[in-house]
Image (cartoon, rainbow, N blue to C red; front, side, top):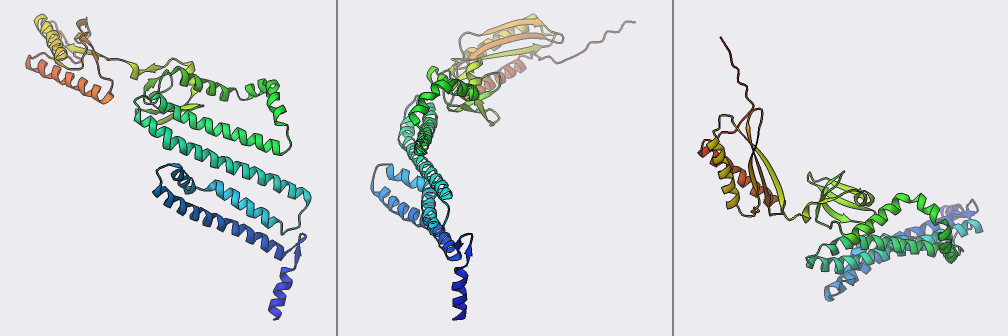
Length: 360
């Protein structure tokens, strides 16, 4: 009995204006909040999964995917129980006002995160699926831009809602941006440049997702075009994020838009090669190029120059194949054919040599 009385007296002990019992209830409410998030998410997810199995629409599937990482719900529910728990404590009006304002910010941001995830889920389930069925790649590059715009618009709207709740005149603030816009533009010069460049790339379409492009800084395949930057994969499989301003202000080579790939070869023959064999070598190369599929009818085989160690033939031809792997296979086939034909006709390739003449 005395132990129980001692415990009750301990719970009635006052620290910083509140009893231990009040602090205990506050902690219990927070713990209930965390437990509630687990229970609510589990129950909701279970119901939605059963519903998703019975319906053909994708809305319930999107909600299930959001509940895989339910941070927006956790933020809102835990904050709600935090506010219930704080009512057990005696706190100053100033602290209560701060907590109320911070709670409102968390509610708005949590709701905004949910809306963003939901809209991006709709884009993924409907627009991306449609884009995969089309041959055009312009809709593929529109999707990352649409996702980025969704995030920007909703977060800006959330900030305006928060400012309006705190008593700011949002209409006056928007109107005042006309005056303060210059200062903001200078402060965010790089962001604005990249944004405008992103819009320019999207509208003018100098390249699209999947194209192989090259500029002064990078050479690779375009994987994603965003508002601020473009993601490119180099040929050694490195992912590079390039600011859009860099791409819009520099000359860009779009290899994918080429109709043919130009190949230039230098073949050096030994100086002992006769004129007849030089002519034979040129004829063999022309025959090989004519008989190889995907080679343009326009090609050039010429006796280029007398080099230090060789008689040089220059071969220029055009491969009508844009797939890089297939292009390499065609070039490999031509090189092997030239080597085999030259070996058969005993036409020798040159290598650096020195002839020393001695006089007696």
